[in-house]
Image 1 (cartoon, helix red, strand yellow):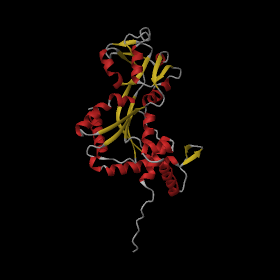
Image 2 (image 1 turned 90 degrees about the vertical axis):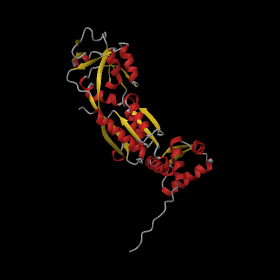
Image 3 (image 1 turned 60 degrees about the vertical axis):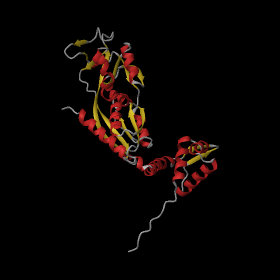
Image 4 (image 1 turned 180 degrees about the vertical axis):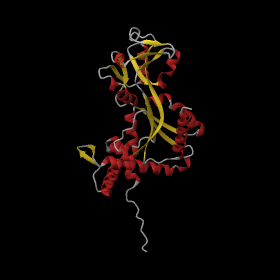
Amino acid sequence: MKKSVQTLPKITLKQLSVFVSIYQTGSTSRASEELHLSQSAVSSALSELESRLQMPLFERVGRRLNHHPNAHPIYVQAQAILGQALTLEHYHKHQAGQIRIGTSTTIGNYVLPSLLATLYETLPDANVDMYIANTQEVVSEIEQLNIDIALVEGVPRPTDMKTIEQRAWRTDTLKVFAKRDSQWLIELASYNDDNGCYELSLEQLARLPLLVREAGSGTRQIIDEQLLKHLPNAEIVMAIQQSEAIKHMVMADIGLGCLSQHVIETELASGKLVQVKVAGIDLSRTWWLVWHKARHQSPIWQTFIDILTEASISKKPQ
């Protein structure tokens, strides 16, 4: 039986590093500064990589380098290879390790801090980088392999489902809310003392000004799918990127808001804000855990997964 011959790859980590840097910075000069290499060495490494792959990676227009359609899939694979190489190089540091966590804004601002506290209790020397943006932006970073794991509020909609792993994590509920004794409700809605909330019909809510999150956010996705579809003539006063801004605008009585229970629980408890229940509307949603299948799952990655799993179990109704 003929013994198989193992071939060594001719593509080098240096070539991949140069390519990734050019892809991210857009030029060989900036890549040479970032990598502390001469510009000729950078250009040579890129040419060698294109030769090995037998395909162009950039289209040269004057002094500019525009991404060739071939570039993106190679970029994703190169990021994964370089990440695994760095993991191997620094394997002895994995007990503390580094992890890059992405979250959508509600989770990042109101839920992630307690999870990180648990992670630091378990691994005091953990090195954590955070990226907080709306769901659409966070999922895009996962696809680019720029973050290791993400927690998002909206249903993940990656461009390539084959490369992304997603798992339901926890449930959350959005609440419509207003300022206590709001001018918009005093003449319109009845206050239920037993439940501590105003009660509105869909028809009544449609006549009131609403402040909502921007398109692309997980909160807005649920509002569109589970609330606004019943209110085709609703008055959307503003689409706002920050939940805190919506909360303060509602406290100024500019209109009504709709946000996660986590964002407004303190103000509801103090009486500054009051819940508005809308008949026939369910604003519950699922939070998702998302990662790239090519991402190396280091020990700190698994430790964080264990923390998330425990947090999910503890939040389930008894």
